[in-house]
Amino acid sequence: RRLLKIICSHLKGVVVLFIDDLQWSDIATLELLKSIVLDREIPSLLIVGAYREDEVPDHHPLAYHIRDMEQMNVSISQIKVGNLGVDNVIPLVAEA
Image (cartoon, rainbow, N blue to C red; front, side):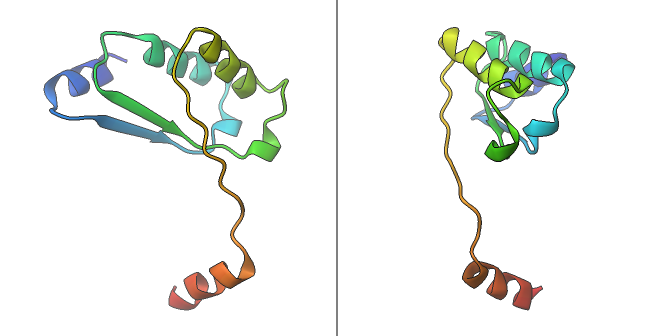
């Protein structure tokens, strides 16, 4: 947390922190993320998190933390991205 404070305080512009596979996060990690989000001493930080919606039911710790932060009026935007179709995957694999 202190490292993020230092980085965000000294850089001009927005710092983007991308975290993938949040569905596998443990409670301690989710609590740390929530404390970072709520810390007003960390300026210009955008956290982008990705998770598999089908692996996060309502009783999942991540779902709980998202609801909890929404109740604290934290601005959370969710963008649902579907699976790639076969027609999209073939050109990607062909170029690899």
